[in-house]
Image (cartoon, rainbow, N blue to C red; front, top):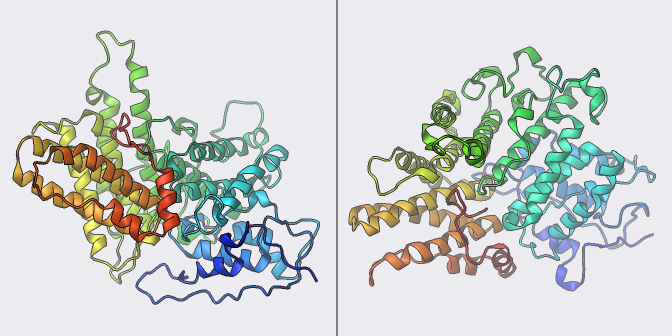
Length: 539
């Protein structure tokens, strides 16, 4: 009889396994927030329980790990895009033990175990989730060196990256180190390319990479999904910076993913599939290949193309005779702008609204609809003259910001739980608000009271939604705190004394959020936010 270890506890202040489980009691299997809560019926393991001595000390007991894995994949939209679902860790670590097939010579590797408590308030540096994230980061070099469990390693690093973003580590260099790790992993594995579009060589492409040999069709589709999630993660988490991307489209020949409902049973002939090089692949959506996930990936493709254009423009034209031209006069800019406008109107009729007739929300489609507006703002923001009534770029970014605002209006009319949205929604709302603030500043300086009133009310809607999200998530809290700092620095000094301006939200949000929650958000939020080249704070 062996007493179960509790390596995640550093003392009474850290809580117990039972305390941790209490944090999950409100979580449900059903992603429809209108349904009544159905808490997991999980009983904490007794104090004295048989645990194999070979079970790694840094991993919770099997039953608790099983519960965390189930909760992670049942709670939130991002998990549904994995397709492999709980199999990622369930088959490699938990199922054998639960089936009585535990092999003590092959214990689960701590380096492929990831934190599963992003929705809880235990986010302090010594908390359960952050501690396990650090252990995972510390342990990934060994399997990377040996090449063993390389696919599990990639999956775990992908979730770790997403986890850092969810707890507001976007200003931390650790997030971008993690992004770089997963992007570098997919290349030697060979997930970014497929035959016959590999590099020039006398050897077949599969002989040049370290990926699994002879995968089944189901495994191949899983690997494609993993690649595209890596691709999308880099573009989403880098959207608020002007830093270059690691994965470039010129190096990608992988087939786009199939529909979620077709995985894993339906096989789609490769000859019928789309790739990035397929003519007009971004704006043509074959019904048999299109769902909210494929549209989300295509939206990320456009966002990445805009980022790459902005980053490389000055270098590309630095030796031009007469100096660099106006970026808007270049063919590449005009093509990008045209494709963005076409993409917004190209969605199939049944995929133009994230809220279905029966009241169910598709968070992935919601993001797919938001991202082209964000990409439009990123493309035009450096060139927008908000004081000119004839500036095409100013018209573009204002229309895009109000399109994001329109989606917020629709969201407020539902009972959908904001926690079930993609974390990156908070960034899209932030971009919307900062764009509207540019116009508000111009209206204030022009003494346009009507314009000031309209824009102030629009900004207040975004602040309200970010405030609600910020009272429950670190990611949302960080965005609203930065937005409030920008509002206080850029807008409030321009308002005349006695002007009825909206109340600053940050203290309210901070007071509603758990104490550790707010304290941590302040720690990871830049104290004096500065605008980057694109007009946004790095987020």
